Length: 123
Image (tube, rainbow, N blue to C red; front, side, top):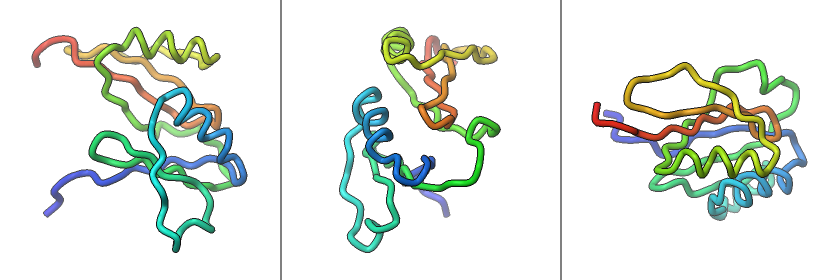
């Protein structure tokens, strides 16, 4: 039986960990957690995201802007995040409306699609 979500993974180009940390830790405010020693030489880094983790791996050879794959970050102040991302020169993209939610999309500095979503009324 599946009992929950432990982690999700996005990828960044090999060698781009510093730029990745600047975005994911600096702009989004996520906390880095130490990777197991057995995995450190594979590159990337891991982040704490509530009770789950976001693993940022390294991978070359594909265009991240061509996929719908994404992480949706649930937030309690969507306007804060819209402004925070704009201040950091991240383009905000419109999303198809979903009743009961306010949301928008953007791309991280590597092209990974991100969604910010807030519950705005009981479903």
